[in-house]
Image (cartoon, rainbow, N blue to C red; front, top):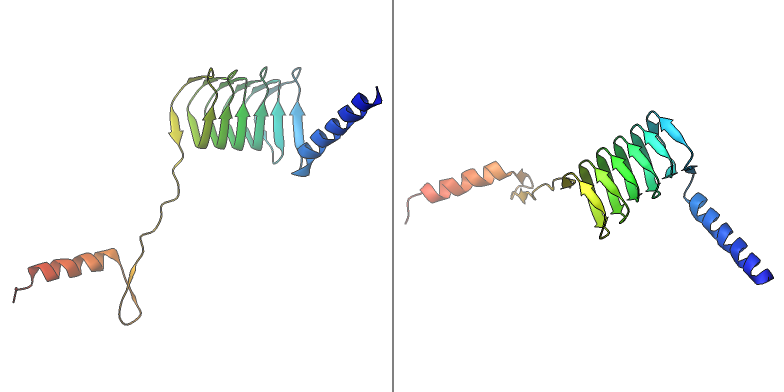
Length: 159
């Protein structure tokens, strides 16, 4: 009899510690309707309806959640309806999700059964600079100088 209560209490404490260990965590319940943009440094859990853009660190959307607007987050787990563009570093789309809009991501997971009406586009990684060759005098040759040198060698008379 007491074991079940103690176990539930321990699980509740663990869930609370998990939510608050990384900082603030805000929950918008199923009865909440917000019209306007949300910008939060906190992680958000949304079960209600948001008519506006959302920018946050991490977003978790419940199955009953509705978002009409753009979503920008470092990570997002979407299980409800979204009508708008999504940009997330790590994106998980749960099978109950219905998304209408373009999806931009670094890492993507989609469960079988999820509905997405839009385009997928992996976000571009930062371009990597080409290595430069060192000159004998310690300076650095750029690509144009190397190309000109190669052309001069090709045009030189053959011995």
